Length: 268
Image (cartoon, rainbow, N blue to C red):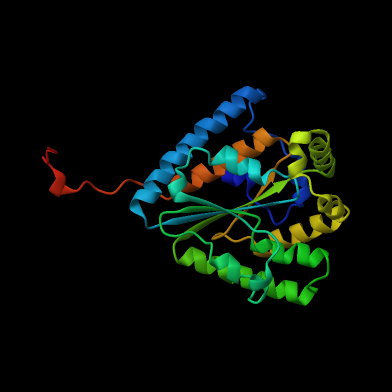
């Protein structure tokens, strides 16, 4: 069984079951696991070099999860060997005044990958069926419409050459409390702490419900969801790095064919 098969969202399974999943990728040795992440990240970098050289295909990685689930850590751990020239990381915050003048997908579409590029969304268009639903900014009917629009949007991206990987970084409420407290206790991490995170934490149950609904509604073969148990940062990175690598390998990437005109050329 491939790593993608192990972590692929199952519409017949509750998302919280993922937190009780075994860790088939982990050796039990944290140092060894971190080294393996680095090795897989290096292979991702090699695959991305071919993607960039050919300049035709595109890859979009979507990272979603509760506050402190490790989206930033995933980017630094999984993509640290990728040439920045062919990588963009986009962090979507609350929409600004200009963005609010357009439909909710307007700002998203501007950031999708160009040919030869890997783009990582740190949060994404899914915020518009998550936080908006939890805080009753949209009703159920509008949310259902948006599910359909998101499916159509992702299908269009896929049909025009974008390979999509969507990862839900799933942590427990207790683990989130531990990570938030660590930010409070360590003065060097105060910059990462936001009082608003405590307010959003009060809606934990509602967020679990809307995440489950979004995954159920928007999982597709052209844009699959993977549920990643993320209480362990190392195991999280191990799982996602393998998923990304398997995806790139399935694209059968290779460097462009040799230029016959350069045969025998001597540079003076």
